[in-house]
Structure formats: C-alpha cells, structure tokens
Length: 169
Ligand code: 2AM
Image (cartoon, rainbow, N blue to C red):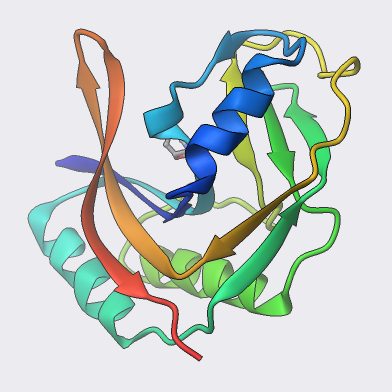
C-alpha cells in the first residue's frame, strides 16, 4: 500500500517561498522546502491496482498551465496547518482538483472531503493562526502536476513523485 496524493510542484518558486516564510513569525514548525507543494487531491492508502488506475486516469487529463497568485495566509485549526494560498484562482484549478478527487473516489480512495481550498502548507503543528504574518506577494506558474507518494523516514516524511504530467494550452 502507498499513501498517495496529487499536487502541483513548486519548482523554482519553492526556495523563494521558503526564504520568505523563514523571515516571518509563523506559528508551528516549518515544512521543509523540499516538501512544499500545492495540494490538488488527497487519496490516502492505495494498492498497486488503484495506483495503476490513477496513473492511467491522470494521463488522460487535460488542463492548461495555471497562474496562481499566492496573496493570502490561512490556517486549518483542526489540522494545525498554516498555509499560503490565492484569494482568487483560475477555475481550471478547481476543475482539475475536483476531477482528480472524483476519480480517486470512484476507485474507493479519498476522505470524503467537500469543497476545495487551494493552499500550500508552510507550517505544521501550528496551534494559532498566522495573524502576525503579512500577506505574501508571490506567483505560482504551474506547468505540470504530479502523483506523489508520501514516505515516512527516520528524518521525517518525504514526498516522492511517482509521475508528472504537463499542463498544456
Ligand atoms: P495538507 O498540506 O493540507 O496537510 C501529504 O500529506 C499531502 O496530503 C498534503 O498535501 C496534505 O494536505 C494532504 N493530506 C494528508 N492527510 C490528509 C487528509 N486526511 N485529508 C486531506 N488531505 C490530507
């Protein structure tokens, strides 16, 4: 079994975001730069057959490149996750995220989540909102999306891309 999720990698934006994040008074523990990503759909524990179906489905998915402003901070209190994300975002992002989630649900994956709030978790174990952190002014220009496997190691969790697909006009 593998713990899987779809996400947009940050590529060259990751060091920029991590540098900005590290200069701000975020509550909680900083997410390592290598683990920063914009979540599209959480799938959970998948077996080899489910994984193969996800790969085949993602191969058929079409979505244009996405420009996503990162201009707000936020906090999921129950998950104690503090994040940055967009105030407004392209509709294609929501369409892609919900289509990937729906395909996961059709083969018995996901966690029954409703709605979609695009976000990049930058701090975990955050027991308060990032009230003292100013809004960022960054832009994610996403040109691909990936299926990731979440692997627990003695140094913490590591997210390994199993496959990526281009976002094409
Ligand atoms: P998060 O950043 O909002 O915590 C790897 O953990 C990825 O899967 C992250 O994008 C994480 O989202 C997401 N994730 C992990 N557990 C989840 C859950 N129970 N519900 C929704 N998303 C989850």
